[in-house]
Image 1 (cartoon, rainbow over the protein chains, first blue to last red):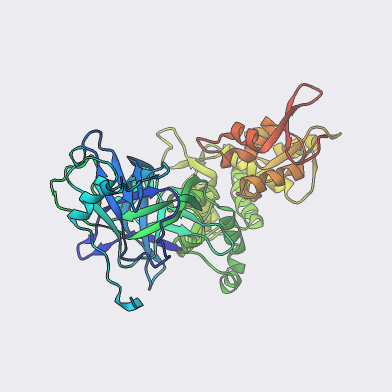
Image 2 (image 1 turned 60 degrees about the vertical axis):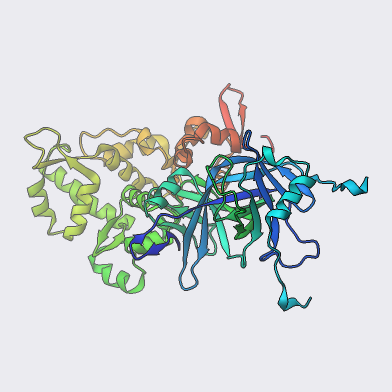
Length: 112
Length: 397
């Protein structure tokens, strides 16, 4: 039997924070397969008109949309000292980038 | 650069301007807040659990939900009232988790770069689907420590494991509310805090004390004076058992002048118990003989009816003479597929009315008996024009 609980602080159980998800196709990896920790991934923009999220990763541009998960997720972490999971956050919204990334062709004026 | 002096790249406003230009975007079309995204320093060992609105609401108001199941069982998740099947689902997409992120529809006035951190990448999550509680184990656990009478109780206590509600809740794949309901339905009761059922032979004996008394005193079965009954039977049965038998097989009389002093036997329950008592010891019973014996075994005034035995017997109308045998729905597997295998082993063709009592408990709002049949069986029409259901896996007979 494994319990799933909220974080308990001095005031008792506290409502978990809301985290966000970004969903992309396939895998994220670095060119040289170095560990991902602390690495820069890309820039997230949004258009003024329609609020379309735009993610630029390396030489790729991705257009996405904001969505609500049909069923939300609980983010759980196993406690080391007990058969217990603690719910650290709830995720209900995501930015979904489901289209294939488009390449950006860098083109400097002096290349022309 | 050696491995331990990695210096991490940090985004500047200049870099961002450049990339906008490269991508042939116009800064004027974009909101001023740009969020450069980085991976966090460490990825915690998080698990994603899919929720439905009930689980979410329960968690939010501070209720604990519980994964249940031993190594041989597939896991379920239980809230206080519901049970869910849990399965690991995979997605080819990557789900990145960010504790902080501004969505396009959210107001955000910072025009500086706002760094955001990914704390985990996921391709798997735990998927939940509402399911029926799995209760066959409960029946087995309680049968193993059933109450066999005061003279044998010492031995039972010494040799069998006993279960409190907390023990059962930890072992049984059901929510606490479903477990309470199941205990009530199977006629379990507590002795000194432990949940018990009566051994069948013992229950026959205990109930017959009550029925014999009613017969001797010529009381109508629906007007039994309680004080007198308790006074006489307390010589024969321990108080907790006597009370249990009375609770199980009778209710207070409805008419107001008797509603606190007299009880009425529950006709269907008594009839069913007597039928099981007749059928259990033998393989098959001639249906006509059985009906006569059964009617003779119940208290004066009660009317037996095969409908009372739905889900506890099989009637074979195709044999000559027709027969009836004991076949209890409660002894069938909880798993739908396994249950159909069992049902089709016993009989290869079923009509709707025959099979319905053995499937009813597995049906849900979304999957009623008709849908279950459509999903797991093959329907044909036999020579008499009756619709029958047979196994999908057997050759047509």
